[in-house]
Length: 277
Image (cartoon, rainbow, N blue to C red):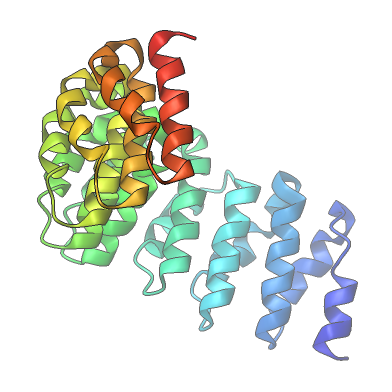
C-alpha cells in the first residue's frame, strides 16, 4: 500500500477511527506516523486513549513526527499523569518546531495538571539554554496564569543567551497587567540596538497595558524608529495603554503622516483608544 493511499484513508477524523489511527502511530513510515498524529489531534479530547502512543512519539527519531505528536497532545489535552513530564522533556528538544509545539501544548494542559508554572520556573535556571528558552516560551503562552513566574522571568532578561532573553521579554508581556514590575526593565530594553529586542519590549509594554504608563515618554521616541515593525508596535502599545497615554497624542498625530500605511493605521487606532472614541 502506498503512503499516498494510506493518507487518503486517514482523512476521516471520527472518534471511531481512534484505534486504527493509534496503530498507525507505530508504522515504519514517518509520513504515516505524522498523518496519524495530526488526525488524532483533529479529533481532539475524544482521542485521549491515544495519548500513551503520542508520548512515545515525542522521542521519535524524526523531528516532524515529534512535532506532530506534541501538537496533537496540545489539542487532545490529556489528563494522563504522564502528560506534563513528557511535554516538559520535549521543551529540551533540539528542534525549534518541537519545542514550540510542546510549549503550546503545556499552556493548554496547564489548567488540568496543577502547578505547571512551578516546574517551568525551575527549568528557567537549567544549565541548558535550549531548555531555559523552552520554559520561558511556555510561560509566555500561559498569560496571567504565569504571574508567579514574574521574578524568574525578570532574571531571564539578564540571561547570557539571546533566545532566552527574547522569550523572557515576550513572556512578561503575556502575563499582562500583573507584570507591572517589569516596566522599568522594558524601558531600558527600548534603547537596545537589536531591533528584535526593541520590538518585543514594545509589544510587552502593550501587553502590560495601562500599568505601563511610566513607559509612555520612552515609547514616543520609537514612533520614529527606523524599523517599520517597531514603529507599528509602538503605536499599538500606546493604544493599549489607553487614556493614560494622553501625552502621546501629538506624536501619534504626527505618525499619521508616516510613509508606511501600517503605522498610520495603528496610530489612528491608538488615538481612538486614548481618546475613548
